[in-house]
Length: 259
Image (tube, rainbow, N blue to C red):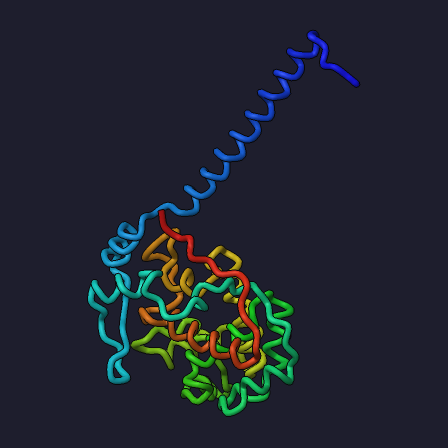
């Protein structure tokens, strides 16, 4: 049997202190990272959102009207949400085939039959294909909107499936102008390059859930994807329905946004 020698005590004490220091360091770093990420309380975020002059709208009788402060608060309130899928990490991909995605796209107007394109967008840009489909459904009125059908600009038809650059008051003219500048001359180009835009400017920049794209908890009132206060909720509900229809469920949800 080996016994600890008296002369070994200082070494053991030093090792013990080093272990304690290391654990304390890890705890401090973790807390610091959480504090850096969660830079606002919910109330502070709501107040900032309400007072930065952003356009926050709600849809009423097919028209967009300014949202009241309490409506904004309720839309931002994580505890009041009706679907967790507005908090799904959008870089969580799905293991579905092009044929399975085409089943989801049946009856979706110009989006119908584009399963392989959405799958390619997932593979190339790392975005969930079912999310991309859900987003496109909302922005194109299930593939039937004027902008989705293609807008002719100087003899060339352009497509915009994700509402990029299409602000509510002049959605068609501004959305088609953006598509023209981006040279989205086919549905496939609108899907692939639209996904690239979202990946580069939002998901890849840390706004990696629908909620974060809409409300940007780290910088409330800035760099918001949409003006409709129910935008994330609407897409999240459609996304959840698609998951259910395929008999799968999401794995990674993020609700830890506020102090």
